[in-house]
Image 1 (cartoon, rainbow over the protein chains, first blue to last red):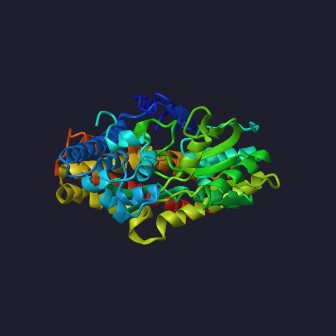
Image 2 (cartoon, rainbow over the protein chains, first blue to last red; image 1 turned 135 degrees about the horizontal axis):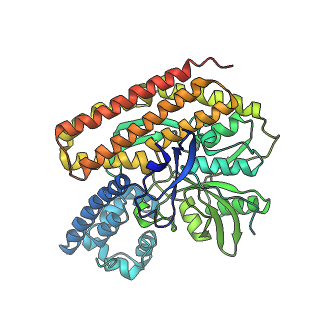
Image 3 (cartoon, each protein chain N blue to C red; image 1 turned 90 degrees about the vertical axis):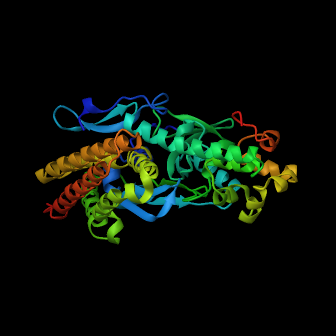
Length: 135
Length: 337
């Protein structure tokens, strides 16, 4: 790629920092140049997020319908699955599966809720009520 | 406490950390392309039976840690690398090194990396940064992806050092130990061994899902994605391919350009004109990876999406595989002087 062809489409990262990109100068020699982002990459990331947003919306609906506890919503929003959540919280996977049921979730102690709340960067109150970013 | 340390921005995090840490102990010749080439960083693997983030596992680089390890080894520089089971010990060890005046490389997860924009914070655990000091509760961080140095509180740093999931860093840190000055002759030999190792990784080992054969395999698989996965899922798979290629550690296209830059720099140490010709081939391959990414973008944006478009996409990868096979064959057949 030639230096003048290095794309400068401002990405989310591009607002904070440029990226280093190797490209050739007029004599064909490689030099390190700066890029603010590339449309193709931006839309790839957008596509991934649209998929995630869809899964979060589905989770939210299940919580509202009382088919799942708020934990499902936070898990999807945190881009986690049960394995990863078990690693982060120290709960067993079967415990997490139980906590996904609304009736079990309601009876959880604050101490257990705290373990989840810390992983999701919210307060215990917000976690209990499934309140975050307008959920 | 702030150590005397120069922040260097790089295209790829592990290259950047390797370059900065080696410069810091006096290896003045080291550059990002040299670190990448000597560390035999160029790779390709597609693991069809594994998934991450609900998409295919595709990597364009060697396993995390190998670039640093191989580069230091080839230059005869001893390395300390440690993992920890205890968070307290992990921090104490880091503090001791800083007190000794030694900047330290850390493997971290990006999910809790506070200075990254939210859009980039996936559960990806093979990011690398350097800690080079501490002021009050803030660690001074040189992250090669960022233009300028940044900071993390001790809580934030502990969190990213002990990120969980695949490739969990477990507090892993590493640094080179200062030794004898590295001579140009050592660099010259390291370049040769790095190229030979990369030739092996791309041409000969590991069966059909890695290296040049892996690229060809992936190209053929992509042609079936539309029928097998349905248009939507196939689009997501392609988006993941592009993110692995261009974003997460500046993969495919970017890596080919760094390798092309490496071969030009290698020419300065070993004046074989073939190196420049082969460098041009990697430029061509890098350009084609980008063309392929643009084609993929057309599909995941929904602008195009016929079977013909998937075939075109797959064929780009077949063409890339051919170019890279030829380039690595040429490297393999170099008559080293």
